[in-house]
Length: 366
Image (cartoon, rainbow, N blue to C red; front, side, top):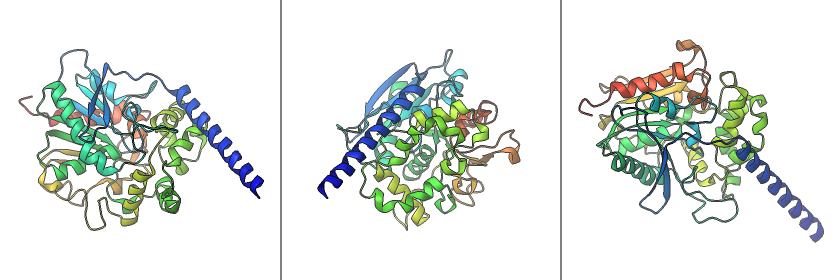
């Protein structure tokens, strides 16, 4: 009996080590340098060291700085993937001073390691919202001397700015863009996301959420896996090499189960909030910040019905807009979740719409 248990344990350790080696190899193989001019580090109030990557325009700076923020278990590569379209480089090329923030646990910010770690393995949405977001805004404003900034968030990065504006309506944000950011979780149907509920009991005993880690091990097969299984992108809108690189480098190897369990609770409650009877968006109507909400027609993680905060969002007399990118809405491509930023025609269809929103809501005095 003891021999059987030891053999099983040894096999498990060998398999885990092999998967870790595979994930690390594909991350190394597909990674490449991003195009920032400098990386600045700053501290949150609870001591985490975070990174923000600065993209300076070649000529004169136009308007206020633009902060770009990634989503759940992602990093800076979603805005500047090597050998792919880049929102950071696109905005820089049009005179914008761009700052790509990496939240705790992501990219070059403080991250836990697979074996030993100097930082906790556990953090949640509230840590990003109450600590990371204000610290990032403060850092950019201090570095630039600006009195406000624009914010573009993908997925959770958009959820964070909406929640931040709801709790801090006077925050120094000139405009906000939420790209593929689910708000109404009763409308989320991605098998990957809904699967959280099926493995909830398992995750409660795990420190690290295994899906992003395991996704890296199959990166070379990314383009050939069923799109409905991944739910992260719409394959017809991506080059195979880009799809492989997305799985290999955009997701983090170590991703905390605690944060993913929070998203599981959002699904269970059908409510984007700290509890069943409270929403993170309570108070958003008090903010006068112009908000553009963007969805992809084929996005399974954040379908169009899931990204609009309320039925009267675009009819409440404030500067709010909702746009869906897809063939039925005048685009030449349909869009999934990550390909809203990295799809084949984003530089012609998506990026200009984001830039136009920023330009339209640039304060006259800036």
